[in-house]
Image 1 (tube, rainbow over the protein chains, first blue to last red):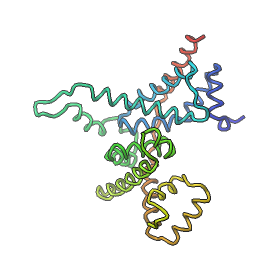
Image 2 (image 1 turned 180 degrees about the horizontal axis):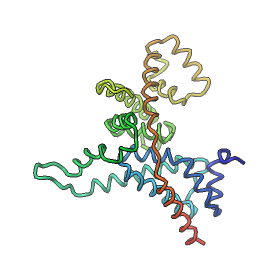
Image 3 (image 1 turned 180 degrees about the vertical axis):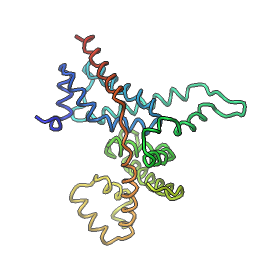
Image 4 (image 1 turned 120 degrees about the horizontal axis):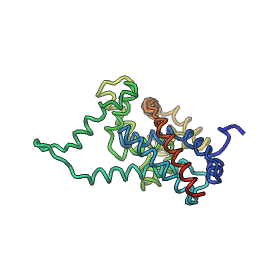
Length: 192
Length: 77
């Protein structure tokens, strides 16, 4: 059987039964979506790498202890773990005491503003960077839907369940996000 | 918009979350409503821009996960 014909569930089953190569296939199959979703959330390549590893390690622990029960829904399950890791990350960083400069600026905020220009951006093209920066400017609830739908490839029904809103709210947030992105692109005169 | 459709239906159509029958009816409806059709085109263009952002983890991350898994397998054995 060809690799692409093997379902996630079959690979999960093989992995749980001790076939370590099945895990590599699962990672390769979903790494782009999971990493992309995390990256767009945290906006820092190094943090995203950590959270990506953390997500799979958490998934591995659950799989190996038989805690995975979601037949046929491996990717949404994985993305839920990733989403929770991102939320934990934000909670932890918010709890970090703010270091304020003599001018009254929060040092962590200053670092975050400087972040996108740092060396992590060398790896992506100008136009990709422009798109990512536009997404970063969206209100959090719109950004969340964009990330989960476009990079996470979750359905609006799954997003609604994950974020605790109605399907119509999730659809509306996506619509406003796309309209806002278009407006920003015009305002900034970007050609993507 | 026609009262039979909401703007959220444009998003459902755009992301192919309508049934084949619904999508077919919606396409017919769009042909008769150029305003909605133009709005859909703008949404499609923005979506195409967004889909240009490929991101992937480093190979080191993947190898660390695989090493973690092998270690966990030894501990569970």
